[in-house]
Length: 522
Image 1 (cartoon, rainbow, N blue to C red):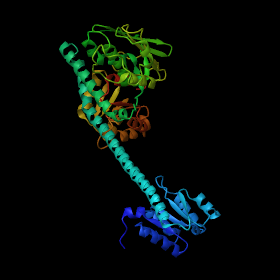
Image 2 (tube, one colour):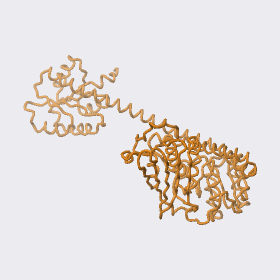
Image 3 (tube, one colour):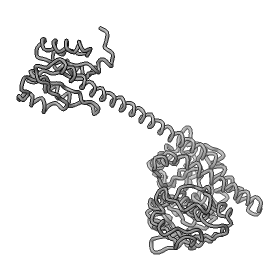
Image 4 (cartoon, one colour):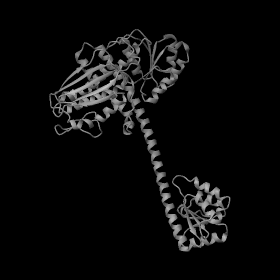
C-alpha cells in the first residue's frame, strides 16, 4: 500500500466510534467534502495515527466510557509544546452527561458536537480544527528551523573560538623570540643611542601586536557583551605608564602637555593590566579630543587607606551640569561640535565604568561647567592578599636575577634559546631542553630551582611533563611556570590542575619573569 503524503497525513481525521456504522457514516460525509480520514478500531489505532501525522480526532461519546480512553488522554497530555491536537466529541442529545464532563476534564482542546449533527456543521467544525492544526505544524516547522539555526550558530561560534585560540597561539610563538631578541639587543647595546631608539620603537610595535593578538581571543566575548578579566597582582604605576605610552602620540599631535604625579612606593592592585590600561587610555584620549590645542592634562595618583585614586584632569571644553549625571550612560556623548571626532580605542565611558566596577571600584566625572575643564576620578581598592603585595623588597627595574638554576623547556628552539640567553644576561644559570623526555632526564643531573615549561610540545606535552615532575617527591619544591601561547581561562585551570605554580602567556613580559624568579620560594 502506497503511504499517504505527509501533508495528507497531517490533515486527516482519526475517527473513533464504538460501532463500525457510526464510523463509516462519518467517514463518508468527510469523503464527500474531500477530507481524508482514517477509521480506528481502538485507542491503539489512534495513537499510531498520531505518530504518523494527524489533523484531529473525531470521537463518539460512547468511546469515552472505554477504559482505554484514559490511555489516550495520557498520550494527548504528553504532546510536545508546539502540539495541541484538536478533538471533536460527538455527544448524545443534551451534552451534559457525566461522560461528557469526564471528557472535558481529561482533554485540553475539545469541541462538543451534539447529535444528530448536520453534515455541513460537521464539515465546518472539521475544517476549523484542521486550520488550527495547520498553524501548529507551522509553529513546529518554525521551531525546528530555529533550533537548526541556533545549533549552526553554536557550532560556528565554537569553531570561531577554536580558530581564534589556535591563531593566537600560533602568533604568540614567533612573538616570543622576537621580544626576547629585542631585550637581548637592548642589554647588549645599551651604550648605542641609535640602537636604543630602534629597540624602543620595535618594543612598542611588538607590544601593539601582542595586544592585537589578545583582542582576537575576545572577539566572541565582545559581541556577546561579555568581558572576561585576567586578574593578577599588577603595579598601578606600570599600568599608567603603559596607558601614557599608548596615548602619548595622540596627545602630542594636539600639542598638549601632560603632567604625571605618582607616589614612589609600589601600589599593587588585583586586576587586569590590559583592561585597566584601556580605562586610562580612554580617559586620556577623551581629554585630548575635547580640548583646544596646547592644553594641559594632569594624571595624579594618591592613596587613602585601602583605596587608590587616579585623577585625569584637563583644561578642556568641560561638561555642562545637566550632562554630568548621565555621562557614563550608553550613547551619551560630550558635544562634538567644537572638534571633529578623532580615532582611538573606542571603548567609551560606559565601558570605562563597567571595567572599573568589575575591579571592585567606581569612577566619577566632575566639571565646573562648559569651558572649565573636566576631571575623571577612578577609585580602585589596594590589593593586600596577593603574594606580590606582601613583599616589601621589590626588585629594582631593570632587575638582576639572583643566581638560580633555571631550565627552559620549549620545542620552539628560537624561543627557548633567546629566553635562555636573556636570563643568563640577567644573572641566572640556565639550561635549555626542546622536548619533554629530555627535560625529565636533565632534571636528575641539573637540579633546577625553576622550570619554564611550554605546553604544546610534540612527544610529550607540558601537562604530562608537569604531572610526572609532581609525582616525584624530590621535586616537590620545584617552581613550575607555564610559558605558553594558550592563555584562555580553561588553559589556566588545566595548568593549575597539572601542578604548575604560575601561568604566563607568550610572549611573556620579561618583568613578569623577573618578578617570579625573584620570589624567595623560587
